[in-house]
Image (cartoon, rainbow, N blue to C red; front, side, top):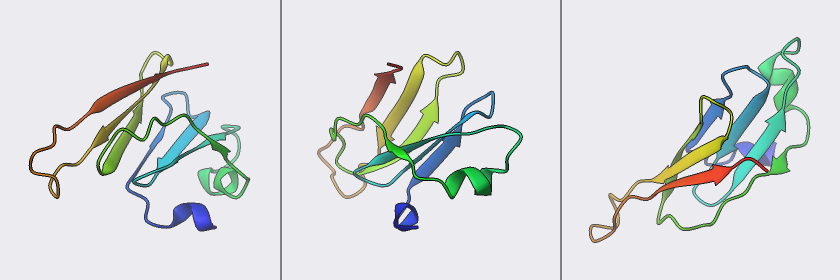
Length: 92
Protein backbone atom coordinates (compact mmCIF):
# COMPACT_ATOMS: atom_id res chain seq x y z
CA UNK A 1 0.00 0.00 0.00
CA UNK A 2 1.15 3.50 -0.76
CA UNK A 3 0.49 4.55 2.86
CA UNK A 4 3.71 2.88 3.93
CA UNK A 5 6.03 5.02 1.77
CA UNK A 6 8.55 6.94 3.84
CA UNK A 7 6.91 6.35 7.22
CA UNK A 8 8.52 8.14 10.14
CA UNK A 9 6.45 6.89 13.08
CA UNK A 10 3.43 4.95 14.26
CA UNK A 11 1.54 4.12 17.42
CA UNK A 12 -1.21 1.81 18.66
CA UNK A 13 -3.66 3.08 21.26
CA UNK A 14 -3.35 1.65 24.79
CA UNK A 15 -6.53 -0.42 24.30
CA UNK A 16 -5.30 -1.74 20.92
CA UNK A 17 -8.34 -0.43 19.04
CA UNK A 18 -6.67 2.37 17.04
CA UNK A 19 -3.58 2.75 14.89
CA UNK A 20 -1.80 5.89 13.69
CA UNK A 21 0.95 5.98 11.07
CA UNK A 22 2.63 9.06 9.68
CA UNK A 23 5.22 10.37 7.29
CA UNK A 24 6.68 13.88 7.25
CA UNK A 25 3.51 15.50 5.97
CA UNK A 26 0.48 13.25 6.57
CA UNK A 27 -1.16 11.10 9.25
CA UNK A 28 -3.37 8.04 8.71
CA UNK A 29 -5.80 6.48 11.18
CA UNK A 30 -7.23 2.97 11.40
CA UNK A 31 -9.90 1.66 13.73
CA UNK A 32 -9.04 -1.91 14.73
CA UNK A 33 -11.03 -4.81 16.10
CA UNK A 34 -8.63 -6.25 18.73
CA UNK A 35 -9.68 -9.75 17.65
CA UNK A 36 -8.05 -9.07 14.25
CA UNK A 37 -4.32 -8.82 13.67
CA UNK A 38 -2.58 -5.49 13.16
CA UNK A 39 -1.62 -6.65 9.66
CA UNK A 40 -5.30 -7.31 8.85
CA UNK A 41 -6.30 -3.86 10.12
CA UNK A 42 -3.64 -2.19 7.97
CA UNK A 43 -5.04 -3.93 4.87
CA UNK A 44 -8.15 -1.75 5.12
CA UNK A 45 -8.35 1.83 3.83
CA UNK A 46 -7.38 4.39 6.49
CA UNK A 47 -8.88 7.75 7.30
CA UNK A 48 -6.71 10.84 7.07
CA UNK A 49 -6.14 12.17 10.58
CA UNK A 50 -5.91 15.83 11.57
CA UNK A 51 -2.51 17.43 11.05
CA UNK A 52 -1.70 21.15 10.99
CA UNK A 53 1.46 20.72 8.89
CA UNK A 54 3.30 22.97 11.35
CA UNK A 55 6.46 20.86 11.61
CA UNK A 56 9.56 21.28 9.46
CA UNK A 57 10.17 17.56 9.40
CA UNK A 58 7.32 15.69 11.08
CA UNK A 59 8.68 12.59 12.77
CA UNK A 60 6.93 11.29 15.88
CA UNK A 61 3.38 10.42 16.89
CA UNK A 62 1.73 8.88 19.96
CA UNK A 63 -1.70 8.46 21.48
CA UNK A 64 -2.43 10.11 24.82
CA UNK A 65 -2.84 7.40 27.44
CA UNK A 66 -6.29 8.63 28.53
CA UNK A 67 -7.62 8.59 24.94
CA UNK A 68 -8.10 12.39 24.61
CA UNK A 69 -6.16 12.55 21.33
CA UNK A 70 -2.58 12.28 20.05
CA UNK A 71 0.70 14.19 19.97
CA UNK A 72 3.08 14.81 17.08
CA UNK A 73 6.59 16.21 17.09
CA UNK A 74 9.26 17.28 14.66
CA UNK A 75 12.91 16.61 14.03
CA UNK A 76 15.01 19.73 13.51
CA UNK A 77 18.36 18.29 12.38
CA UNK A 78 18.11 19.83 8.91
CA UNK A 79 16.68 23.10 10.30
CA UNK A 80 19.24 24.40 12.82
CA UNK A 81 17.26 27.57 13.61
CA UNK A 82 13.99 25.71 14.15
CA UNK A 83 12.38 24.76 17.42
CA UNK A 84 10.93 21.27 17.64
CA UNK A 85 7.15 21.51 17.95
CA UNK A 86 5.05 19.26 20.12
CA UNK A 87 1.48 19.46 18.88
CA UNK A 88 -1.66 18.02 20.46
CA UNK A 89 -4.70 16.95 18.42
CA UNK A 90 -7.86 16.56 20.48
CA UNK A 91 -10.21 13.70 19.70
CA UNK A 92 -13.27 14.87 17.81
